[in-house]
Structures are given as C-alpha cells and as structure tokens.
Amino acid sequence: MTPLPKRRWSTHRQGRKRATLKARNNSSSVCPNCGQPKTVHAVCPHCGFYRGKQVIEIKEKKEKSENEK
Image (tube, rainbow, N blue to C red):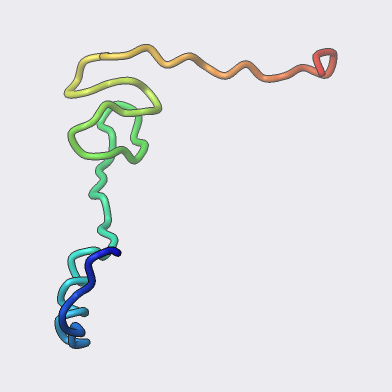
C-alpha cells in the first residue's frame, strides 16, 4: 500500500504550490551581427556568432532544384 496524505490540502495551499510551476518567458535579444532574435548569453542559431566572434559554422540549406525530387 502506498503512503497517503494525512489531511486534504486547502485550495490556498494548493494554489501557492502550483504558482511556482508556471511557465516563464525566456528572455531574448537581437543578434548584433545578423539582427535575428536569439536567446541571451547563447550563440546565435542563424549566424553562429557570440560576443563578436564566430563560434560555430552554420551549414546553409541547399535549395532543391526542379530536377532533384
């Protein structure tokens, strides 16, 4: 048998507990290199720059021509 709570939680306590579980917005900023929105303190996913230096190389997507399907 699994353990059960001794008493029922009041709705006030239940609400206070659930208040910490709310979804939070991630703060974002604009990349100074390409101008796209990016997460703060992270490498830009569009150009690969962080703090004025290229950290990762982004592979460009190849567009499909009409012959390739």
